[in-house]
Amino acid sequence: MVDLITRQDIDWSLVKGVSRSFYLTLRLLPRAIQSTVTLAYLLARASDTIADNSAQAIATRLQVLQTLRSLAQGAENIVISLDKHQLRTSPAEQRLLEQLPDLLKQLKIHPDGIEIRQVWSLILEGQIFDLTHSFALPLSREQLDRYTFLVAGCVGKFWTQVCWKRIPRFASLPIRRMEELGIDYGKGLQLINILRDRQEDASRGRIYLSQESVPESCVKALQAMRAGADYAAALRPPLLRYATVLPALIGVRTLELIRSESGIIKISRAEVRRILIAALPCLWNAQLVKRLVDSFTFRDLR
Image 1: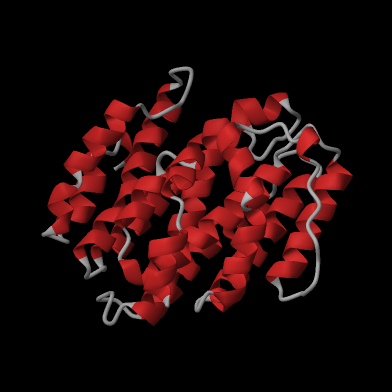
Image 2: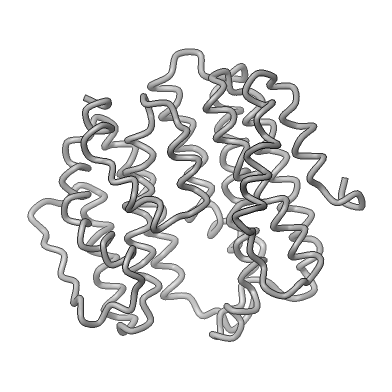
């Protein structure tokens, strides 16, 4: 059943349209988990698009997100109402929202529906926090840790649980240790997003971090990318290992741009291709994973 859903129901042009970098990771995943992770991603990306739609009132967006959370938690016979005329989205995001009812139907029948519901419910909690919290002041350490867990760290745990369920002997480390590393990895990737977007967020009155905490946060994010390297190095399936290390390499490169304060912080397509090529040896040698991540790291942070 998992293979059937993978073959028939993943619209790869849609996935590529809403995520240029994570699309690569999803395409490389083993078939046993590909449909599960991709469906979870598309649902989370759809609710994120709704949360970020500034053309609609916050109260309207909150109502939709709360309805989606009820659906994620198992509620039945609830209709999602989206006013397409008030959606200020890209064409790809518009397509994604148009397909949301179909994605919800897939969720009902998916064999890994319980795991998808659990992770999406947590992500929705983070998205609702984003709309209800006042960001006039930076988040406390505890708030930041909880927020990064909700919107990304929980994905690391979900990823681990699905792999454990679907891929025999998928890792050389115990599942609890893999869950810990996966959570840290996810939280670190979200912290990099916060660091990257902090000036744009501040211009909209959303302050996640104080300026004084940026250097410390960069170090913390790098440590999380090393947790990601430990996670990837423990993975036995070569393609899964390769797919898992890519976000860490892109993350470390993004941290380099953040620290250099070079204006627009965006990884070019040429740079992504270079990273894809540089990571190829990880396919046949797991011991190279940590060395590769370190080679992408600023000397003063090693």
